[in-house]
Amino acid sequence: MNSDLYFIKVKDDDDGQRIDRWIKKYVPDMPYALAQKLIRKGQIRADGKRVRPDTRLIAGQEVKIPPFDVKTPYKIRSNKKKISDEDIKFMRHMVIYEDEHVIALNKPADIAVQAGTKTRRHIDGLLESLKNKDNIVPRLVHRLDKDTSGILLLARSAKCARELGLAFKKREVRKIYWAVVSPTPDSYDGTIKAPLVKSSGDYEKMIIDDKEGKFALTEYFVIENAGRAAAFVVFWPRTGRTHQIRVHAAEVLGSSIVGDRKYKAVKDEECKLIDDDLAAMDLSKRLHLHAQRLILPHPMIRGRILDIIAPLPPELVKSWKSLGFNHKYKQDPFDKLD
Image (cartoon, rainbow, N blue to C red; front, top):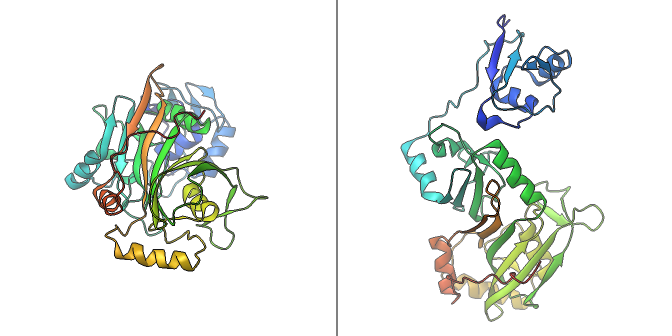
């Protein structure tokens, strides 16, 4: 039984956060159902006023936490996992842009963004290494697949995270991805519209479903090709569905992203010969998909545009060179599109 009454001041970094989520973060011993009950009864208050579960807190407010029954004593959650010097160096090496509000990382392809089944080391668990002088830990804004490298945005405050989230939701962010696909698409540019939904047979796999799927739109442009064997393609996923580019490439273009073991285009006899040709080339074994560029309005500074570019990692530079593709390509093939 916790018999003490607590008042916890809301930090600047938690400005705008829902109180039910804030309680989960700072009072981890309080069961969710109990928190909801105490809120309904008016026993949890902010600056003496009643709140609802979706009430958004304001920095500087004091939240009253009443006594409650728990098996272990009340405590404010702290990050118990120690971040090593090696982890700090690893994270700092990824930073390609940073200001007081936003951080951009160039994520490698061998680390997950968040925890999952059998995933112990991930970006989310190492964010403490990027905390600022006020000890504010940045937060994730969006995700990349573990096998995809490239730009990953972080926000230094809850308000910045909300603004960035809104920009993604309103499709104000131009997301440019580079890929090598095989075989070369029949059409060298176009728009793909194919709704996506999670497969009932394999929940980690997406499929095209005209009835149940969510709207998904991808622009693409072929920059260079090595005959029928492979092509350097730039993609702009206007929507942000899971595995969107990978599914659209394989199922609509008939051109799998090289190294993709999950989504394979239907292969004919000619394509099987192409696979043999690719196997003989000096290509990386990883997924050849890279989040190369993000263009978006700055979330906190009106009138400023962020244009962030993540250079190809060395293993993909090797593949681009092996195929005779320009790994220093600088144009935006979609700059004329609205």
